[in-house]
Length: 321
Image 1: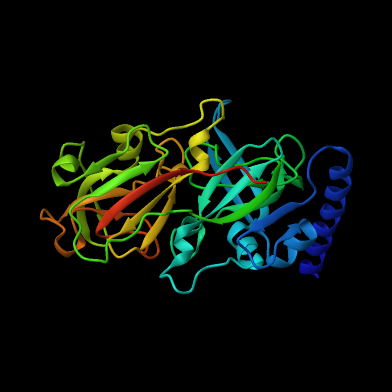
Image 2 (image 1 turned 120 degrees about the vertical axis):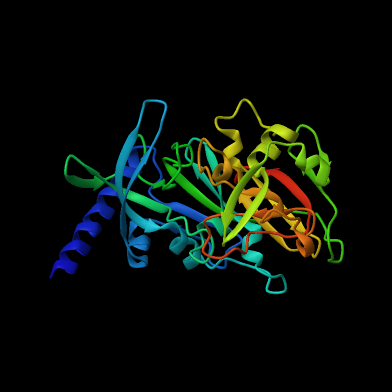
């Protein structure tokens, strides 16, 4: 009986949402498209069967600290239901893909699929359509609804895309090639940076060093964010609000293995994930892992940690068509 009552409540919310979307200028559905097997529009009627979850989140904003309680469907469940396309011939090809979240006003942000996947980053983002206000739950209206994607754990709310209308799954577009495997002696940073540079051990050691322990190993190196934002500089569109949140970096190893991180997840002002370009482990060189290794802490599996780095490419995601 309790489950039936809850279903009826969500069904009533769905009807309200559709009616509100007809005349208020807000989308009553979210389009899931791109590199998926089953592109489709998702309203609450389609989201409900995928399961509902409630989360309370806190983050900073221009108007001060925010705390919200949302109900919706796990973003990963939505993408997984659409059928994410991957290349079975490439190891962990999922990690070379991202989803672009776009609001009705064109605001956009990137989530790496490896960041969202329960097997890797396990970020529990939600496609929310209900918010608890004054001890009662109601379908979200303006300015954030009818749909909003959440980014739990982020320091600020820049990746909480309000009035969400699209989710586009894409491959990274990386063109960097491996070198046939083997121990790397350096890597190049290219793409949407102000100055493309190559880094060998001496160049890395000249940058501010930090040490963190991952999987019982103490890695020393330079923050990936510092490397990109300071050592090479990010080339952003200053006319676009939070332009870096729609950008990402792809790390490639000498064997051609690739892993993608969104800049929003490593920016200390937003996701604050302390990804590291390591050049030492437990006080010694990396040995068979090359001159540098991308190390991503806090993951379920360390598959986004790329050894024998030969390339880091920075991209700005194009807008949805």
